[in-house]
Length: 623
Ligand code: COA
Image 1: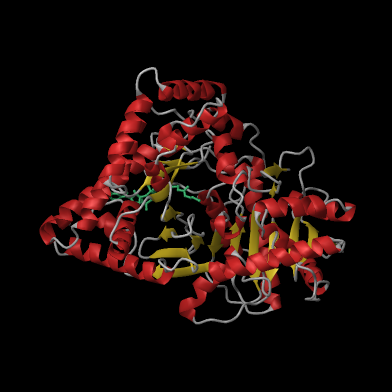
Image 2 (image 1 turned 90 degrees about the horizontal axis):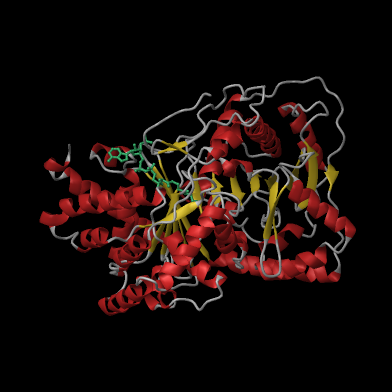
């Protein structure tokens, strides 16, 4: 098997444009999955000690003292902690992964805020050069062919296995993102996946001017439609959806999950509606052919594109041109704006971006080839019967969407002073360097350290998702508080960066604290016992109020992922560190007077530049 090994860093499928093996490698995926280790349950005492250490920079001494007492009691021999730990260890023996089902349920399916802004990440691709309908359709045809090319690697089980820190990663998420969709419920949602059906779906859905179509992308002999054929089919769709006065049925999916759950039950009472919804849910993925958005300056372009990906711009623009429950939606604007929005429940950013990297390369190479014209049937338009009640739900969803649109404060920038190259030249982890800069930016702005979340991959383990790297450490606090003391600065910076990298290593090896604490809490709930005091404590609330929610999503393509903050007074920060520049997307809420995305971006740029200057000025630092 052509597998690529690398000591550090995540290796993405590097077989871009190499011909996909025509022969399947049956069983390869399962054999790989079976070879992966199980996610460990960390020792109780280790998590308790690390939890107290993580609180130090973010809570005051009185709170800390109180929590120390609670933790002592919790972990006493034969105490509550011990009992819950045994419960977790038992669960771990019985399941492939003691955490993954719980995590899917609590982090996603039970989460009731709209998926738009609050959960689904967007991806902004570099602007394309077209600015008309023909360019849009042409690109869409190539993109669809590119995704299908990637899909054939999944289907053939020829997708190269990825590595992190020299260890093989779980590939399961790749099998979850196509042919899947979230389904709303009144109290909790679910996810359906049709990929493993006896007859897996052979169509995608395309939406234009709020009208959905089924586009069959496979011929009867199993071959995919050529780019040329896809172009013709898309043109037919475009021409039969010229009316712009249609009800934006898809906007229903942007509502609060409980409201959408109720509206959904009502919507699918009608047989036609049910069939149309099912066709969207079953489709391999969705392509949104967007109307052009208002023009902005070049400097503002990526920011505007980011909000188009995250929410579509509001009910007047493209927010109705989506089915936000669909796992993968590729957005192609008539003005050359392109990107993706994905529903987060089945996967993290890296597999999505690996797919995008493949598609972007594919679209560069694949030229339109004239194929003999076998007439293809007209793609089927999906009908919806809109009752007055459904109309009311649509109006409500429109209003709520417009409130979200006004509330989202977003800033996307290209930090062009340097990229991974500078921290690397100082023998520092680029990710840790960026995270310490974020700590400095936040401290300079608010004169305090805050609970900070960085996602760490748990994919070294079977069915692994993520744990949290708590980027606010005692070492980062020491550094940001003494930034004005030139003598100590460099040593403290080095210490802070090393501490972050050490936390990362501990997290990706399954020894971080947050998922373990969550497991202990859920075990307590499952045992129907009262919640232990440590989970009712103010420190626990502070520790889980992430004013900074951050994530690195590296890509080969010059793109950036973006997402909303996770608390009303917080920031969402996503970045793609390239070799000589870094793409950042920073979000906040306008309804919070204390936050401002542009101001945080400026503070972050200043912090990065100042940290570099600090290292440059200290000749010893350069190794
Ligand atoms: N000196 C020189 N180079 C170094 C270095 C050092 N001390 N430490 C790291 N590097 C290099 C690495 O070799 C790597 O090189 P590459 O660019 O050739 O690949 C590069 O710097 C990046 O390493 P680093 O910045 O340390 O980050 P990482 O790639 O190990 O990633 C995480 C860190 C936390 C992002 C990663 O472990 C992870 O978990 N990723 C998944 C996150 C996720 O799921 N996000 C999505 C949520 S939706």
